[in-house]
Length: 244
Image (cartoon, rainbow, N blue to C red; front, side, top):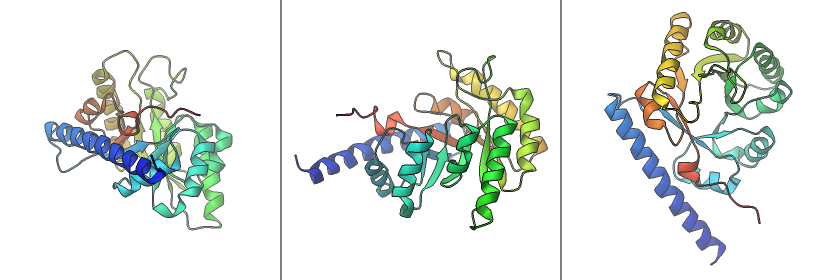
């Protein structure tokens, strides 16, 4: 099979998968009474090549997510002219902040004061030389009792302090909250808890209305509890490519 035929087949596969996910999103939004307020679809492209992202762009995708800085930075540089919004969705070391702010429009995993300070410093440094927009920051909330032990996230009780720190930092914009539903448990109670955390946050910071929640396996539950941003990977891109 020729390269162009292979590419066409992959584009068709992605188009079919993307259509199915968008249909699920519309159905879930309709069931939640929010047909006119569809959540932003972030396609998580980790492990997949830049060529796949270019295909997604041709299919109307505008937001992509990555969770490893080295991989994300390389893709963002290669695809700089595509007009994409890059979302960093993985746990982030403070030493990587300077690199991440070069391409990311949003970080969904802000979970400690040191990271807030590192991101603010990095953005401010770039703003001295460029017209870079403020960085959207989502506070990652742990919905389990072992906050940060496995999947990252701050305790709900720590959210107000982090929010104030982000809101007071030049170069950062407090977007809202983010969470990953616990493994091996129904997602609804977790997303209900996140919605309560979000409501308390909005009461103090009215502009911080975003809720980043929902992945391939639980997007319907996330939408039911107010998700404004979905992070969908495998249901659109398929399994991780084999190296060979």
